[in-house]
Length: 245
Image 1 (cartoon, rainbow, N blue to C red):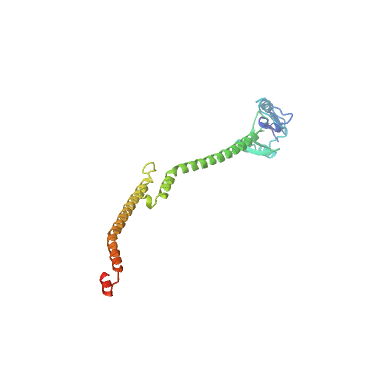
Image 2: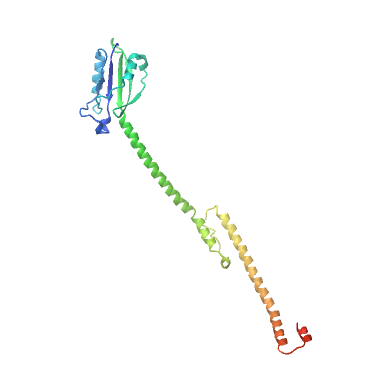
């Protein structure tokens, strides 16, 4: 097969989980060899990659998927679009791409570059946990706020209910408060107060009528009782009793 392959694995896991860092972790390293002689351009690219960043690390054994490398080596034209691929290896997630390049007269070469994205997965896990807690706390806060607002909003209605519960035949003069109520309750309050006024007036008239009837009936009844007592005070014949009646 003409040309060769160069794979570079960039490991960022050492920054987030020290347990995943091998004892011999080093800066960028070339992790895949070639099946043929490597050109000076490829060696230069490998050397530049190994010194590109002191914050990047590599683990031995973090190999680019051979199936993808073989596909690029077999069909170089299919590895020119820079498509990202993702895979799992040794419990870690990686993402990378393989491209086919021509350097000098020895190409084409398959260059595979991958990066450990475990720190992204860790970030997303943490973000989901924090988001879940935030949503739960927000739901509790909204429930508490809704309860407070409901209690406060229905306070005038409870006051009206207490006032209505205290109205009786002896307290028909009581009225619902006409101020401090929501606009929605004002028409109902006015209508209820008007009804109480009509009931109070009707009850007063009925009481006066009953008093007048009692006064009007008191004198005739007293006269009848006096006359009856006089008639029964002595012996009378039937005709006299009939006359008294």
